[in-house]
Amino acid sequence: MSTIGRRRPCANSLPEARDRSGTVGGYASSGRFYTFVPEHPTAVVKTMARNMRRYGPVAALAIGMLLALQSIPARADTTVVPEDHRNNGFRIYLSPSCHNDERPCVTNPGCNDYTENASTLNRVREITRNEESLPDLIDRGYTVRIGRGGYVENRKSSNAWFSHVHIPVHTNAHADPVTREFNPALCDDSGTPRGTQVFHWDENDRQLAQLIFKEFAPSSPGAGSTEYLDQRAEHELTATHMPAAYLELEYHTWNRGVQWLRNGFAASSWLIARGIDQCLGFPRQNANGKHVRTAPPQCTWAGSK
Image (cartoon, rainbow, N blue to C red; front, side, top):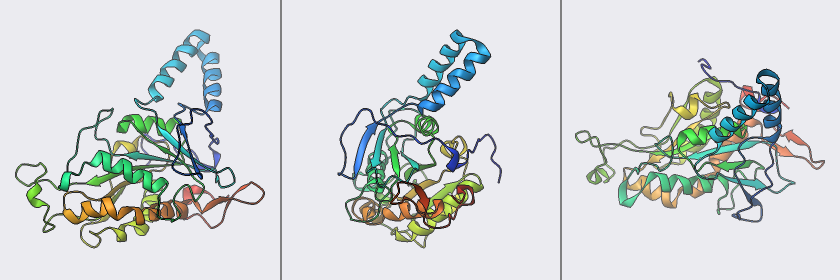
């Protein structure tokens, strides 16, 4: 598979970002929230200096303002930072479902008054920091940013933040074969597609997606029916600068699927974090404050240090 139209910097070579502005609260003492910062400051300085040499100060300022405006989402993203002694140096961007390039998002209904956009935002929060005493992303030392824009806005935010991994999080739907719209009559659990799907674009994506799929997919109530791993040309896969895996957690057009998404997913959410951890080699901070891999990375693009 090719990397058409994508620049893939090595995860270990990216500058570290630590936002310290705009605290807006937090889930727990081991996870602190910070608001969106358009771009890493080092990258901003280097870009402005390069443009000044090429185009002169006035043009460089205009270019800088344009890039900044392009990277700022309609709503402030939410960043959750682990405690200093846990920070493993990696940044994960989670992009909840929004089927518009910008907010507001179109509503995607499901069984029992389910709405995809609201549900996936809650599911993303559980992947970040759950209440099940299971090793979530924050427990594992990852800094997590939760996108609050449309899918194009979130992609821009993720690229500007220099994420190491980008994860769009959705739930799937089965349309009525006649009307091609959601039909509540099909919520009786019989004959509708169900299970987890994970999509990728290139080989780097595939390695990440395969590990998440292997860990997480068996936990969904539709496991063994139509779950699969597949290539798909989604915008948040083809236009991101880092490896990405596009998750369809389960179908929201059958009753058991909706019940599990609402009441059972939290107990399985840590498996997504485990798949990411396997990919990156279980990065941790040692007693000397250094970022180290505690196991060989299962993704070849992740390096070995």
